Length: 322
Image (cartoon, rainbow, N blue to C red):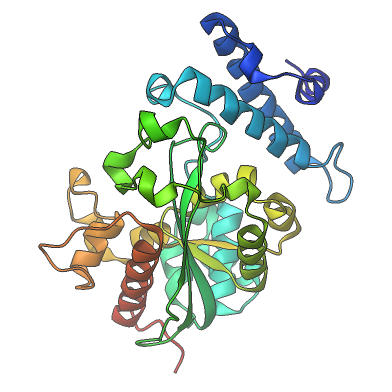
């Protein structure tokens, strides 16, 4: 498939419910996801303001693919690798996030980080951090944002400082199609969200007030997430205006997992299978989670834990402004 064919495919009138044959559904899903990847990359690579199509085209195709995946069944797709989830933020994203935390120019951070960001740990710690950030965490029904739904959102604001006080935060549940009332909520073994939590709730894609509040928050303040590439990928295909804000530089994600890996020396001495940079493990080391407690895997709880843990790490490294 080339770009012209991808645009044509995205603009085609296809009703997933009319595809009743398994082979036809699989073929259509594969074309959808190939087109999403091509369109996404072409849009991001185009000069700002000269994109060949609006990003709404990509989001709409992702919406169509989710309907099709509902018919195929999440359990059949769970082990199939997708392409819409980034594994990590780019080097440029990490440099911009450090610059935002330290209120200095990206070029200064780049010089400190060195080639391949080999000294990014130095870049994170050589200048004090301060200012307001938004903490964000989402729970979803799939690993891949063009196949599943955002069902839980946590948002919290904090002024970075020793024992900086966060607000009470905001929590939202988002609905999914009624067929899951009987099938069960996908990935409930991770997030433990039940149908009763989602019943009669507006879906994330249709919840305009929630979308506007999230977008506004992230355009005003840098936002933190643990493994921010996950939230970034999901918001690209689910949050209206997010891709546009990211490309224009108005939205800056900060990956606290990368911060943990770069500045916590214990990460390098612990075995890989201990998952030393996982939020739960990191929080236990920083005493923000008791040894007998577990990460909740609910948006607001995880946001609060992340913020308290990153503040404890910053305090441990004397990173706060005087």
